[in-house]
Image (cartoon, rainbow, N blue to C red; front, top):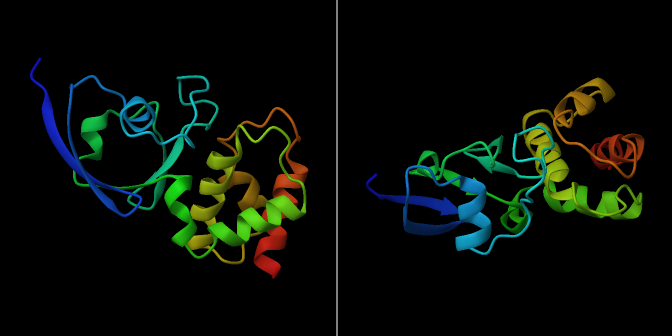
Length: 154
């Protein structure tokens, strides 16, 4: 198959590269572009460790082909600090000790960022729905939900 030239914005920087039609976005981000926050977890879209924002919406980068990013805005945790909620979330998560190993943290924070950008006053149910696709094997979910809820309070 013939390689494709794609261009997209990655954390505010223009990226232009050649990809194979079968290249997975996660592999391109990590292996070719050096972005380490999206992790390789299940490789099936179940765990959420590969979560990135594409055009403002969370996606599982292990399920997206790199060619799908052509013309898109991709934001990983490395570039999300310019977003209004991300730094607040990170500070509150740290303060509340909401993560233990941190493997799921980038995906959870990006999922919470997407939620808060759409709904600055979410209910506990809204928060749980927003992070439902992110598996955390260390904390349970209460510290994570509490940290997101505290972030919106203040």
